[in-house]
Length: 108
Image (tube, rainbow, N blue to C red):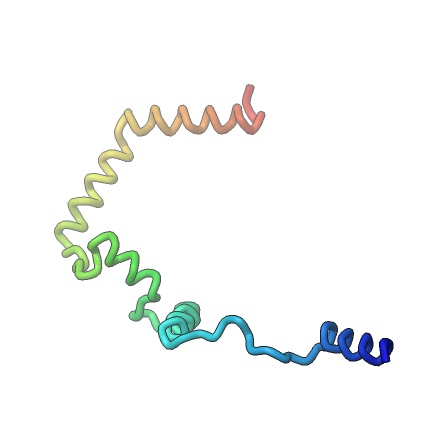
């Protein structure tokens, strides 16, 4: 009888059958979140945004921001080009290239 009891209990302990329910049963909110997270990785058309991008826009306050008009875009581009051609930018660029070359042992 000992052998029979031992075999019975060992098969219960080491059985692959599931005798109990899983410890995690998702509720409706977690199901919805899981579905949203899965949908976030789905391919999109060019005009729709991912959920994570929408959340980022809400956090930064740019969710209702409009595209810049042509005049403002032109002004900011001109300012950028002016700064890029400045002597200050040239000094910084040359310093950075020199430091990078020294770090990579290209220039001594």
